[in-house]
Image 1: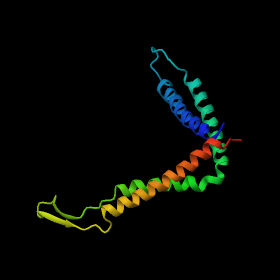
Image 2 (image 1 turned 90 degrees about the vertical axis):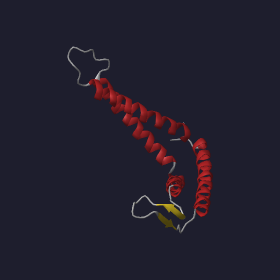
Image 3 (image 1 turned 45 degrees about the horizontal axis):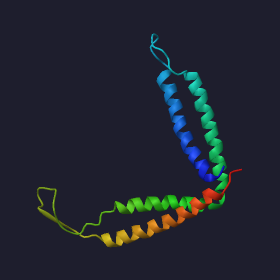
Image 4 (image 1 turned 135 degrees about the vertical axis):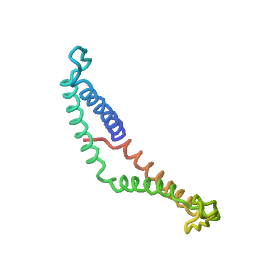
Amino acid sequence: MNIKQALKRKNKLVGEIAQEFKKVSQYNSIEEKNERPYSARESMKNWLGLTEELITLKCKIQAANSSVNDKIYRLSELKTQCKMLKELGCESGTHYSKWPDEKYITKVAEIGILERDKMVKNIETQIETIQDELDEWNHKTILN
Protein backbone atom coordinates (compact mmCIF):
# COMPACT_ATOMS: atom_id res chain seq x y z
CA MET A 1 0.00 0.00 0.00
CA ASN A 2 1.44 3.37 -0.96
CA ILE A 3 0.88 6.55 1.04
CA LYS A 4 -1.81 7.78 -1.35
CA GLN A 5 -3.81 4.61 -0.74
CA ALA A 6 -3.10 4.79 3.00
CA LEU A 7 -4.42 8.36 3.17
CA LYS A 8 -7.61 7.29 1.40
CA ARG A 9 -7.99 4.41 3.84
CA LYS A 10 -7.35 6.77 6.77
CA ASN A 11 -10.15 9.08 5.65
CA LYS A 12 -12.50 6.13 5.16
CA LEU A 13 -11.65 4.81 8.63
CA VAL A 14 -12.45 8.18 10.20
CA GLY A 15 -15.92 8.04 8.64
CA GLU A 16 -16.47 4.41 9.67
CA ILE A 17 -15.39 5.18 13.24
CA ALA A 18 -17.90 8.03 13.43
CA GLN A 19 -20.67 5.78 12.06
CA GLU A 20 -19.96 3.00 14.53
CA PHE A 21 -19.96 5.31 17.51
CA LYS A 22 -23.17 6.90 16.29
CA LYS A 23 -24.75 3.43 16.39
CA VAL A 24 -23.42 2.89 19.92
CA SER A 25 -24.79 6.22 21.05
CA GLN A 26 -28.11 5.95 19.25
CA TYR A 27 -28.98 2.33 20.07
CA ASN A 28 -27.38 1.71 23.46
CA SER A 29 -30.41 2.91 25.40
CA ILE A 30 -33.75 2.41 23.68
CA GLU A 31 -37.33 2.01 24.82
CA GLU A 32 -37.97 -1.53 25.98
CA LYS A 33 -40.74 -2.16 23.44
CA ASN A 34 -38.64 -0.98 20.45
CA GLU A 35 -36.55 -3.25 18.29
CA ARG A 36 -32.80 -2.64 18.48
CA PRO A 37 -31.53 -2.55 14.83
CA TYR A 38 -27.86 -2.59 15.88
CA SER A 39 -26.14 -4.14 18.85
CA ALA A 40 -24.39 -1.43 20.88
CA ARG A 41 -21.84 -4.02 22.05
CA GLU A 42 -21.05 -5.11 18.50
CA SER A 43 -20.83 -1.50 17.31
CA MET A 44 -18.58 -0.69 20.28
CA LYS A 45 -16.32 -3.62 19.37
CA ASN A 46 -16.19 -2.37 15.75
CA TRP A 47 -15.52 1.20 16.91
CA LEU A 48 -12.59 0.13 19.09
CA GLY A 49 -11.16 -2.14 16.38
CA LEU A 50 -11.38 0.53 13.70
CA THR A 51 -9.73 3.01 16.05
CA GLU A 52 -6.81 0.61 16.58
CA GLU A 53 -6.50 0.19 12.82
CA LEU A 54 -6.48 3.96 12.39
CA ILE A 55 -3.75 4.42 15.01
CA THR A 56 -1.58 1.78 13.35
CA LEU A 57 -2.13 3.30 9.91
CA LYS A 58 -1.34 6.84 11.13
CA CYS A 59 1.90 5.60 12.71
CA LYS A 60 2.93 3.92 9.45
CA ILE A 61 2.11 7.06 7.46
CA GLN A 62 4.05 9.21 9.92
CA ALA A 63 7.09 6.91 9.74
CA ALA A 64 7.01 6.82 5.94
CA ASN A 65 6.70 10.60 5.78
CA SER A 66 9.54 11.38 8.18
CA SER A 67 11.76 12.72 5.41
CA VAL A 68 9.03 15.04 4.06
CA ASN A 69 7.51 16.25 7.33
CA ASP A 70 8.99 19.70 6.73
CA LYS A 71 7.03 19.93 3.47
CA ILE A 72 3.84 18.68 5.11
CA TYR A 73 4.09 21.25 7.91
CA ARG A 74 5.05 24.03 5.50
CA LEU A 75 2.07 23.18 3.27
CA SER A 76 -0.28 23.36 6.22
CA GLU A 77 1.05 26.71 7.38
CA LEU A 78 1.04 28.18 3.87
CA LYS A 79 -2.62 27.19 3.48
CA THR A 80 -3.39 28.94 6.76
CA GLN A 81 -1.48 32.06 5.68
CA CYS A 82 -3.30 32.11 2.34
CA LYS A 83 -6.71 31.83 4.00
CA MET A 84 -5.91 34.59 6.48
CA LEU A 85 -4.50 36.92 3.81
CA LYS A 86 -7.62 36.48 1.68
CA GLU A 87 -9.65 37.75 4.64
CA LEU A 88 -7.39 40.79 5.23
CA GLY A 89 -9.31 44.02 4.78
CA CYS A 90 -7.60 46.33 2.31
CA GLU A 91 -10.22 49.04 2.01
CA SER A 92 -9.04 52.57 1.33
CA GLY A 93 -11.06 55.66 0.63
CA THR A 94 -14.16 57.37 1.94
CA HIS A 95 -17.10 55.20 2.96
CA TYR A 96 -20.46 55.70 4.60
CA SER A 97 -20.18 55.23 8.33
CA LYS A 98 -22.31 52.73 10.19
CA TRP A 99 -22.36 55.07 13.18
CA PRO A 100 -25.07 57.78 13.29
CA ASP A 101 -22.78 60.56 14.57
CA GLU A 102 -20.41 60.20 11.57
CA LYS A 103 -21.69 60.33 8.01
CA TYR A 104 -18.42 59.32 6.32
CA ILE A 105 -15.18 57.72 7.40
CA THR A 106 -11.92 57.56 5.53
CA LYS A 107 -9.85 54.41 5.63
CA VAL A 108 -6.22 54.02 4.61
CA ALA A 109 -4.80 50.54 4.15
CA GLU A 110 -1.09 50.05 4.69
CA ILE A 111 -1.20 46.87 2.59
CA GLY A 112 -3.29 47.45 -0.51
CA ILE A 113 -5.45 44.94 -2.31
CA LEU A 114 -3.00 44.54 -5.20
CA GLU A 115 -0.11 43.84 -2.83
CA ARG A 116 -2.27 41.40 -0.85
CA ASP A 117 -3.41 39.59 -3.99
CA LYS A 118 0.20 39.32 -5.17
CA MET A 119 1.16 37.80 -1.82
CA VAL A 120 -1.74 35.33 -2.06
CA LYS A 121 -0.74 34.33 -5.59
CA ASN A 122 2.87 33.79 -4.47
CA ILE A 123 1.74 31.58 -1.59
CA GLU A 124 -0.66 29.65 -3.84
CA THR A 125 2.24 28.95 -6.22
CA GLN A 126 4.31 27.62 -3.31
CA ILE A 127 1.35 25.47 -2.20
CA GLU A 128 0.96 23.99 -5.69
CA THR A 129 4.67 23.17 -5.91
CA ILE A 130 4.75 21.47 -2.52
CA GLN A 131 1.46 19.66 -3.18
CA ASP A 132 2.83 18.29 -6.48
CA GLU A 133 5.97 17.07 -4.70
CA LEU A 134 3.92 15.42 -1.96
CA ASP A 135 1.51 13.85 -4.47
CA GLU A 136 4.48 12.25 -6.22
CA TRP A 137 5.91 11.13 -2.87
CA ASN A 138 2.56 9.67 -1.78
CA HIS A 139 2.21 7.77 -5.03
CA LYS A 140 5.67 6.20 -5.04
CA THR A 141 6.31 5.61 -1.32
CA ILE A 142 5.25 2.24 0.07
CA LEU A 143 4.34 1.78 3.74
CA ASN A 144 6.27 -0.78 5.79
